[in-house]
Image (cartoon, rainbow, N blue to C red):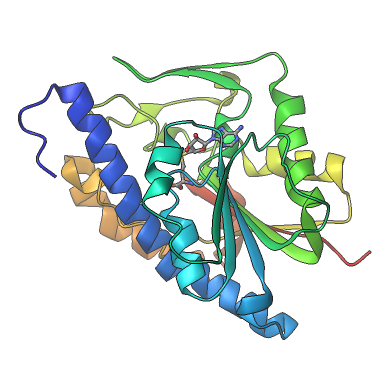
Length: 274
Ligand SMILES: C[S@@+](CC[C@H](N)C(=O)[O-])C[C@H]1O[C@@H](n2cnc3c(N)ncnc32)[C@H](O)[C@@H]1O
């Protein structure tokens, strides 16, 4: 994409959309699809019978990749501009998009075997400003909105279904994902009340359904590091960080996946049979 002749903020926005598209392809094809196929195998399900909801699906590429892999895939997002991006998709019959708020999902109970929500939980219950500097403020009802969102994801999930949530870790002090158009890493602290920690997510899920199994998993293979590699720290740190993520897949390091030593949380939540 040629971005040289437009102002830097607009150029950054276009670059972010392009990064999102490439990041989504990598995240779904290399990270989530293998997990979803394992899920089907363990439940003896044919992917064609498995319905997946992507909550906060952004441009919708995830939904198309999941449908191409044989799943029935549906994406929702609250932002109106996303429906413009969706127009180019949806050629497959098993693809669908709905503009909706994830805090109030327009689906019947137990409609999906798998629910996915990438990089969205942190955006619930906050007011954000992106330009010229990234600024975020918690809303008074943040906790109840986040609880409602998790309650909705679990409500539309079938018994023994799985919900995957991922987002930057609130208990890790550096945020590489939310920043100004120059993509500088941001220092943050729990008092900011923006990025959720693993403990907070566990507590919210327990409030909704104490029987759910909640486990952090390693983000190994989830990232392309494309955006961070434009900066010195990304060039220097992306290979060691990916190596560290690989370690988090194995004992005795597995426990670090939900700890303050992991910059990005991926959380698997399973609804137990009722
Ligand atoms: C950081 S983007 C992530 C997009 C995509 N999941 C990805 O990982 O590339 C967050 C998305 O969540 C959407 N979003 C934020 N709050 C939402 C809500 N309450 N309901 C539905 N979508 C929401 C935004 O519009 C945005 O598209």
